Length: 375
Image 1: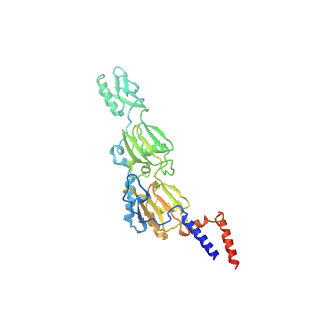
Image 2: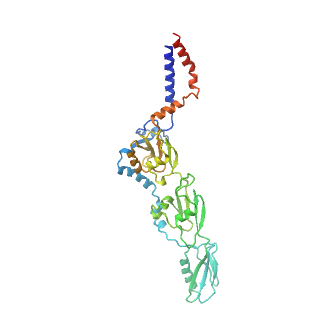
């Protein structure tokens, strides 16, 4: 009788400890949860978050495409909406420190090379200073023709840029080589400049990125270098202009993968991962994973304090086709939970004899056995 009571106490304690052990991840099925409507200002708790559970296996193709189209709206960077950016036709603009040569027919009075000073002017003999900064070569030639015509009869002017020093663009931020590019009469597009900055189109590194900003003429535009490299929209591979600044932000739009996979970690949505492709790339642990419940956690873009949790059952390999149609997005969290037996085995492994737990109960077990043998 004493033995039975002691054994009951021991196993009760064992199961109590099992219940207290918290394994990382989702231990129970996520359920639809409505937010607490009585929310005080700026004081939110987990009870205020609305959870929307979505079964991918039950969605049709158009419904899956709707979730995918949210990505298009989110990544529709604004630069392709501005005509003055994507339709800009490059011409070199003169500025201080540039030099030009003037060849005037019928006389050599003005024939020379002239340096544009810090005020944007050149100083011509017999005529004086003329401002030509911030003008293209054709515009400068027209102005000089009008002025020189007052001093010379029927002048014919040949104008040429000798040195290019004033026109530059800058690429800074999360690129391998922050550079300043000197422009000349040859136009340069965004992709060419990015290559000179040793930009990595795959952005498989959290230190680098694919998104950023264009600062031009006092305005700031969003850009996506990955879109330009993938030729998703020719408007995003625009010609650069004098004094453009391209800032590439650090990669903060990664996908986080953890749970029962061989290669947990960070992946990047610009590589166009579908759920099936990511499962394949990260390596599903077939011995420990619960293939019935592959979760994708995504914060709702439409509602505050709402999380969509997508669930895919891949026990039937046919369902991998559904996963192939479902595209992952930046900041998604992919979690593969352990199977129930794995949870139990891991719990028991914490109570193995390498701890002192069972040893501390040896006297109870031994005494119980002795008490049982005595009668």
